[in-house]
Length: 77
Image (cartoon, rainbow, N blue to C red; front, side, top):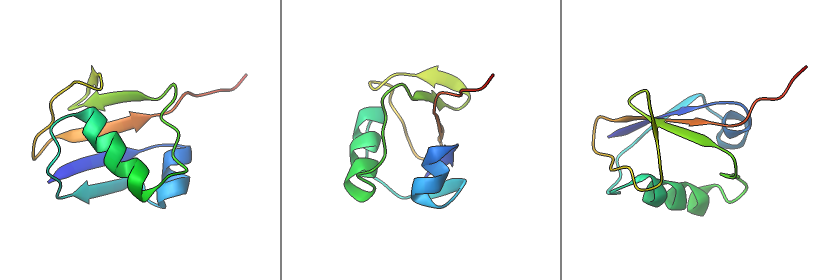
């Protein structure tokens, strides 16, 4: 089970602050591709990803029990 933490527009698109998914994916890129197949309106441009509270890249390996956070850019003044 992979646990996802969602923020800002990701929460709005998916309709939840968190998801737990039973998936057979190997890395962040595969997870992104899965999410895009379910939610094509997601935009991963400029989104930071963290796995277990450490910043990650598309090649970062993920496994059951990991917590993956998608952190969109923040704007404000």
